[in-house]
Amino acid sequence: GNSVTQMEGPVTLSEEAFLTINCTYTATGYPSLFWYVQYPGEGLQLLLKATKADDKGSNKGFEATYRKETTSFHLEKGSVQVSDSAVYFCALRGADSSYKLIFGSGTRLLVRP
Amino acid sequence: GAVVSQHPSWVICKSGTSVKIECRSLDFQATTMFWYRQFPKQSLMLMATSNEGSKATYEQGVEKDKFLINHASLTLSTLTVTSAHPEDSSFYICSAPSGGHGYTFGSGTRLTVV
Image (cartoon, rainbow over all chains, first blue to last red; front, top):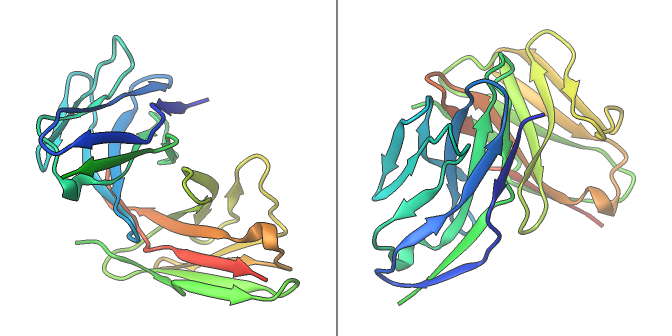
């Protein structure tokens, strides 16, 4: 079945550091890929998405490229801020018609001033 | 944009009682609703998929008699935790597809069973 694997956290960075959170997936066909963010005490928010191979999703300085050849969708940001501290979830929606969204385990990011 | 209103945001109940959680789509019709649970510092685990006017589809390992799901209208889906026990304490979240590969999430319900 479909699954998502993302790097374990927590990831601790200093402000303005470069961020990479790895995400790989297993799925048949061409799934859609998402990154969601959960700030402390809040609900899930869509950060970015990509629906086909080689698409790049971007939002708020974050980027992720849908790599079919490596089945990856790594999240990157060139310069993190303290306000980026949150839990980041990689997610996949399969190519079938079920619309099910399958989440990775989440990666906690802590950015220090 | 699309909004899913989830209530209550938190609830404390005694062991053996039942708790109902509601999710309403406010400005769109949600023919499908996904129900997740999230343990502290863990990911969201899909419990079941409800479709308006038909029986819910449960994921493997989820007890359908304990987690009753009803999706009687295009704007309301409910999850009832029956005969709740402390191990059912968790954060429950609903989500509906909202067009353009997007999903709208409820704000979640924190259930504590004492």
